Image (cartoon, rainbow, N blue to C red; front, top):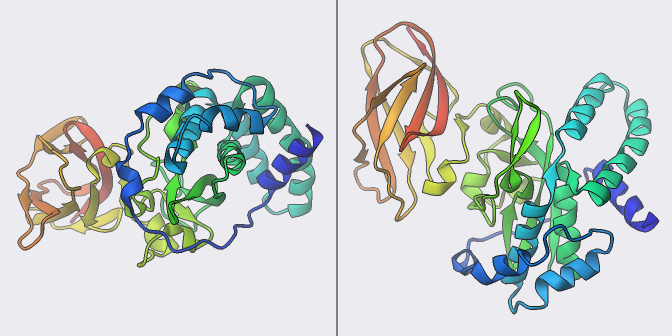
Length: 338
C-alpha cells in the first residue's frame, strides 16, 4: 500500500509525459464490445487495493488487447465517481498559490495522500486518478497505456486567454497503433449548480477520433494530439465551444473557425461543418436565447462529408448562438452583429 501511495503521488504531481508514437485510426474501433462490457459488469465495487488482481479478473477471460482494455475502461468509468469536493479544493489552492511553487508543492503532499485515501476507500477521485487507474490496470494486462496531461475545454474553462492546464487523460497502444480516451468524461458529469457528480456512463471518449478529441483536449506534449496537422494552443482556445453530443455524429464546426465572429446585419453568413460517414441528422437549428430556428442544410460541392447552411442575423449587438443537431447542443459561437 505505501508503494502504491507513493506512485500515485508522483503521478499526480508530475506533468512529465513520455514521448508518443505517431497514432493512426484502425480497425480496433470497429470491434464489438458486448463481451468485454459483460465482464466488467461482473465486478461492481471491486476493491482497488490490489490492481493486479482486479486487472486479471477483467482481462483474463478476453482474448484481444482491445477487448481487455475495453473491460478495464468500462469498469473504471462505471465504478469510480468524480469527487467534486476534491476538485474544488484543488482548484482553489492552485489558484491561491499559483505564484508560489514551493508553497504549492508543500500543500500537494498531504493533499495527494488524501486523494489516494478517497480513491481506495470510497471509489471517488479526480481526473488524474481515473487516468492513473487506467494506466496501471492496463500495465498489469501487458497493454501499453500512458497518462496525458493538458488542457480540457468546456463552456466555462479554457475559453480564450492563455489557457490553464487542468486535465488528464490517456493514450493506449493497441495493435501497434495509438488511441485516445478520457475515462473522466465518460463516467458522467458534474451539476455545478448542486455541486454533485451525476453518474452517466457513455463511451464517446473511448478510442475517440483524434480530430474530434482535439476539439476539447489539448496535450502539453502535442505528439499526443495524434494528428499530422496539429492545431496551435491559440487555435484550440479560440475555437467554437463544442459539446459531447457531436461525438454521436462525428460532427465538427469548420466555418466560422473561431468562437468570436463578426457579421453584418442583413447579410447571410455561411456555416460549414463536417459530418461522419453514416451519421444521420434529422434536424439542424440555430438557437439564440430561448428561440430556435430550423435551417436547411446542403452538401458542400465536391465533398462527401462537408455540409453547410446560410443564416442571416437581423438584429445588431452581441449574441450567443448555439448550433443544435436534433435539438441537442452541438457547438456555440458568440456573434457580434454590426
